[in-house]
Image (cartoon, rainbow, N blue to C red; front, side, top):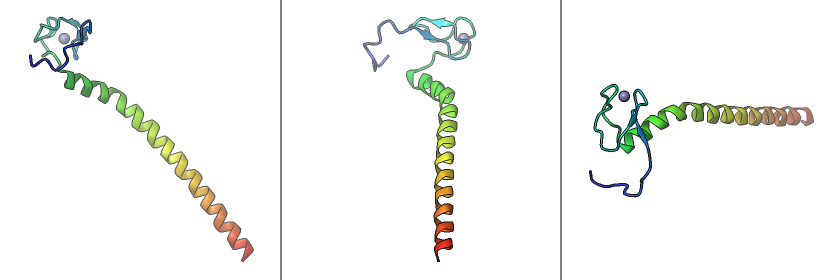
Length: 84
Ligand SMILES: [Zn+2]
């Protein structure tokens, strides 16, 4: 191990496939044989789980904001058209 995080201490790791608890010294899951996840792989798995929701929420927010701008612009244009 290259000791990238030496202060992790009590962090319990789990198999990314079957979620069986794994000892930090286990290279492979004792339950399903999945290779132990590196911190990067765990982060990727976590992001893959939360990102779709975040992106959906963000897109929905953007879409709503854009709709409001569109409506405001349309109102401005129609106001000007009435005045001219
Ligand atoms: Zn497993």
